[in-house]
Image (cartoon, rainbow, N blue to C red; front, side):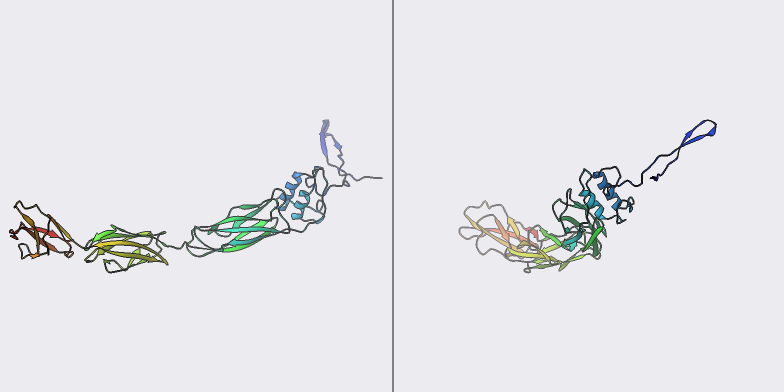
Length: 365
């Protein structure tokens, strides 16, 4: 009985240019374990790696190794299920189904995050788990390069980060494993600008005086700026109805003026922007002039009278209705922006009043 041999030529140099030809026989009828992908006579982890390489298209699988003549996930399944002794498990188990089962939430803003879930149906991950590749269709959202579904589990979660965007951006997240892929979508919007705070300094000031208000936003104002509305609970202060935070800035200053009050008055100032509010409570004191003088050396002084005029040298009008027992007096009936002239007199126990003191001038802011 004859045998077929495939010979390969090997040349041996001889004198005078002669050659001897040797034939190396290869028996083509030898049987090969279909799971022994690298042909080393044993089925082991090296064959698993070869199967993965073939599946990824990095080498070519032929009909001599797989009866189906194609490279597919079944190759990996067969070899992974084989024992190290070379016993190959036959049969084609049902292919797994991979899905991006959820993205939650599906609408986020720049700087916010979402959570994605990948799920294997038809079975859980085997030994070592299943490494699922992840990609994002847009720089508007970032995902990790992969997520591992742990051994024995059918799903795993992964983070999605909303990046800075100029406008609303749609993003497709794709998960892939063993030739199976699945997608899910979400939308990334620009971060919503909000009102961070309102402050006024000082928080207590008198009629006619001013304070500085500061509005702060959560980020830079957009093109055209951001208009922040202002409102107060009473007329104790004056302020602009709205303050514009200029484009690119995240804060703006404004002036608060205390109006005329006859007694200490509280007022609440509120700033409003994009549905958010911030408030501060201010105390407005009456405008006043505080006077003080040196005590009279005359005996039996019962008290003093205080007089005010609007023109230097008088005439003067008495302010107190009862004698002032000490040497100081607060005039709370002044008007902001006015100048006043003050004199005092001393009164003894027999109700004799002295001449006017020297004149003092006071300008009210």
